[in-house]
Length: 94
Image (cartoon, rainbow, N blue to C red; front, top):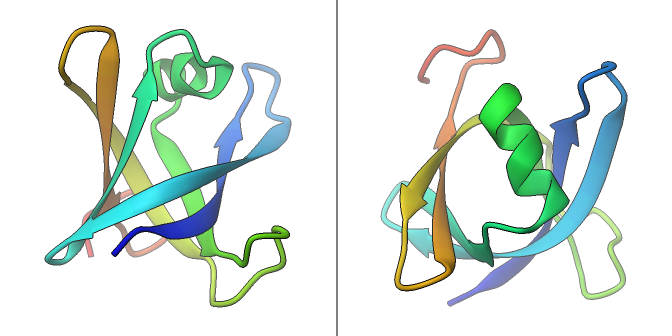
């Protein structure tokens, strides 16, 4: 079952940027499908530390922020798969 979330990435100057995404939970891990042209994907290449907050369709938070580390995986064709691995807040796996 897919769920909506706000994904916070960081620009090169340190400014946080929120993007609404659809998450695909698979076991303990979360995945996002997207095209490689999305600006937030480019930010992941530089700084893979992100914060994931489950939200409703209007973007209102529906859960606690979860620090995570993003890993970009190849997808089908132009599509990329982003794996979100939970961390304990300092970038290390939980």
